[in-house]
Length: 286
Image (tube, rainbow, N blue to C red; front, side):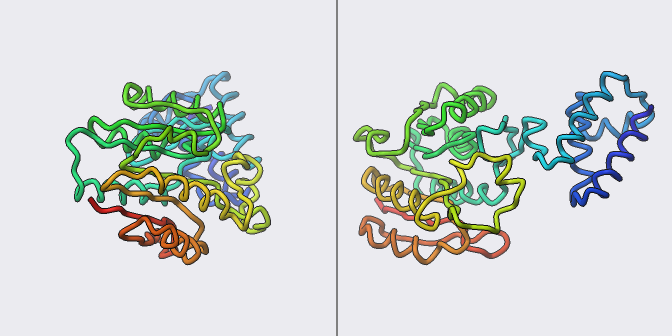
């Protein structure tokens, strides 16, 4: 059986299953299974597929048809132009989280530090935020914290892949006062669990496959947002930035919370590409 025939059948099968990104998903899965780039899939359209390769493709297609995210099947997700290893121990990086990185990088342009920044990423997961910042900000020192040993293992793998491991420290611990070790940080960042445990709108495949401890939080999803930001605010240098991702309906309460800490000189909300509140940011001037 030729590659074109198998790929076309898979795209039709995915469409029949109601998968909106049928072609993209099929291309990513086949590229992984056959160790090809997506472009090469079409350059080698008439190439026969071996029985062994076909079996790998079938397994990937079966998993995707059952709802498993492509990123977990391929163990790969792009973020800010870098390729990150992911598995079911960590959340799959989302495009809206790239805006959090962009916000911090914009702040660093206005607050340059030749010696590099001290940054901490709370609930790091795959490390996509902290490691991207470590890669972009020369000479910086990143501390990546997560209570999940599996997540830290993934973050360490990504640090090696990005060649920033020498600038990173990894801490397997629940976020509390001890993770800061009486240090001051120029950048404190987090994409914490912020979905209410009672939220029924969360996609079923997200609930089924992604780690619940990285998604859900008590107190209508606000528990970790409040706790971690309150802790972090006590460990900011001057100047410094503290920036967290949050739910689209949590902007007002989190802005009020940041202002109530009476630490920040400036508090603002960053909206995502859909125009929804997505990141809460507090800045301390020099």
